[in-house]
Amino acid sequence: MSQLRATKPGLLVCTGICILAFLYLRNPTPEEPEEEPTHPAVVECGFYPDELCSALFEGKEVAPQIAKFCNTPHGSEMLAHLRTSGNCSRMSHGLRFLTRPLSAEERNVSLAYIITLPKELAMLVQLLRAIYVPQNVYCMHVDEKAPRTLKTAVQTLASCFENIFISSKRQKVASAGLTRLQADINCMKDLVHPRFQWSYVINLCGEDFPIKTNKEIIHYIRSKWNNKNITPGVIQPSNTKFKATQGDPESSPTGNTYASPNEGFKHKPPHNLTVYFGSAYYVLTRKFVNFILTDTRAKDMLWWSRDIRSPERHYWVTLNRLQDAPGATPDAGWEGALRAIKWRSEEGRAHDGCKGHYVHDACVYGLGDLPWIIQSPSLFATKIEHLADPLVVTCLERRLRRKALQQAEVAAEPQWQLPQQSHFRSMSHTAFYGRPHQLKCEVDRACMKSPYSTPPSSVAVTGAAQHSYSVRLTHSRRNALGPTDTQAVNTGGLQMGGHLRL
Image 1 (tube, rainbow, N blue to C red):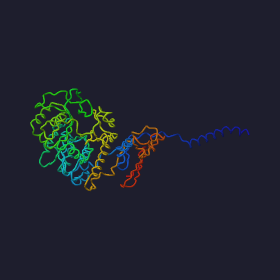
Image 2: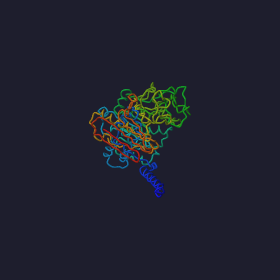
Image 3: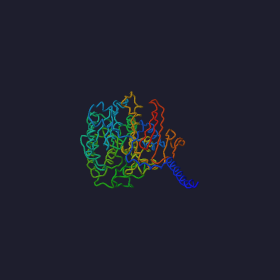
Image 4: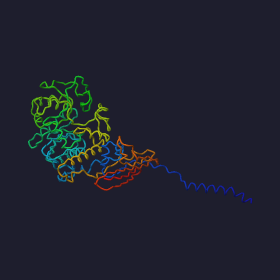
């Protein structure tokens, strides 16, 4: 009995150790959280979401947030056609250019374009594809300081199309000097060659993109400005406030304050001309271009313009106000819907603010600006930067091509359709780390709601382990383009599922 009493404490200790060991094995110490990956992951977001573009155009609230997950690639397949010379027919088909006039009216009206090239080749291809038709003619000014790869690609493109050419005279273009004006005139000297039979010329820069089809542009010019030049601008008011910034100055057609790039001129204008100022953009008749190249007053004003800042904002509008100039509009003011642009000074009056960001008081558009852009009566939108948000350009391009083919009086050829299966690439998922919850969103028509519709019915946020995120996107679209496609991709912590009925 005494031996039993002596061993009892040892048995109790042993039993306690066994119990603790059992509990430990059943509930191991929580593992340390895994370190965040240091490299960005890429997530496939499924087939090209035309539904997403549609939701963006309709101003549905959640659409820009979803778009953060999915951004377009830089179009390596598209650019590959320009990096190597070869079969021109294959290039035309690969770039999805329109290769026939889409209507009898368009066949009989030729427009000329003067294009100051953008910095990015991808933006140039999308811009040119949006405005190209075989009956028009395109003069491209390649900046002398442009990268060799851009020059080579443009030369490859121009060698395949008789109606696309590079200006015979190149120069370095500065935003506020005479060179931008001179670049346009250099192209005009090439365009007046008898082999080009165009009626009107339009100038574009690398930050412009059309929001009207070729047919709509022709209708606008012929209905409101037939045989007339469009050069918005006014005489400088006596209460003008002057700009002294390094950016491109511009005048405001809706505000009460007008901004001139020049406080005063170094010399009196030649021929006692009344100097106007306004937009650098124009639509000019062919006869007026011939006048610009031959009239003594035009030549002398070009020489005088060497000493002023941003002379293109004075030159075209001043000469177009001369009574005897071909196609002149001496009594015009700011008329002419050439560009849709958001100025910081007009926020709250002409627009509801910039959804992208301002550069020199002009809005570089974001996805939230798309509804405003397509509601504008203007022919083109500016400023659009491919690097800032490629989806802005892509949505505008797809909408424009769809509208052009709907207006067409000829059967659409298969290669005119923009690809239906252009894959999107998402943002780096490292941007979403550090949030202690799981985001789970079933995105449908209600989720991508309009500001004027009922609240979303299928958005839920639930708690979960840190560094684990699951985003589920559901799109539904009723048409005959194809069956439902389901995708789910897991890339190291960011999961995205997609149900796209295309």
